[in-house]
Length: 286
Image 1: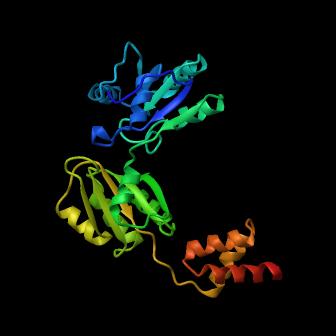
Image 2: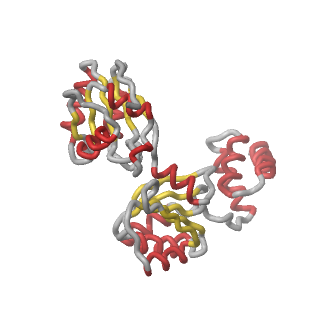
Image 3: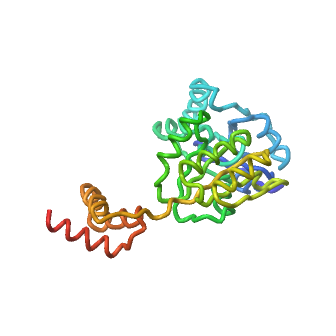
């Protein structure tokens, strides 16, 4: 047995579960699952299986379903258990709760009611994919799933075009080739990207290349499994002096000179000292 049963402080415990390999669960997550008064899960069957694999006994404890379709009633029941002084562990089907998974409203309402809300962190497909993709990780933006409809998907991609960080998406294998083709058209065919498939599982695979290359490859040879798509940030745009000054002036409306300079330099890729000097000049002349 690799867990410890102990009395938990009453409260809500979010538990990260493996995204593939069952052994990726943490010892602390097992401690919480073994010790909580009540267990809630996005998928009760998969959680029971995980408990069986690791030898965690239920000992008559409840395992309650809480997911996107369980509604306010299930959330109210969990909140009433917290109000009665119980410890409640909540686990998503795979990965970290709330990251493109249920739990936000439960977390918010439990915190607003004054209950302890904490986590036993662990596996996350987003973070694992960033580690494997070979793209910049100093800044990233997780969008989750894009819209199914082509026009809505392209509009969303256009809105994300200039975000100064690696873009991260979940995607269905059935839509993958179309999504990559749309991204190539909207964001640029030569923009670097990676497709991470079945992370931590037997058929884990990472494909890297330009958006156009990946779109063509995956249209010709479709794949299956859980998929994360990552797209590099946009390259630095050619900005005129008027554009730069306008950006700095806008930033100075709500920020200090230092913060405005850092924000504009990060967004444009321009030299921070030069932007800072410009911000000082504009501030003194205003």
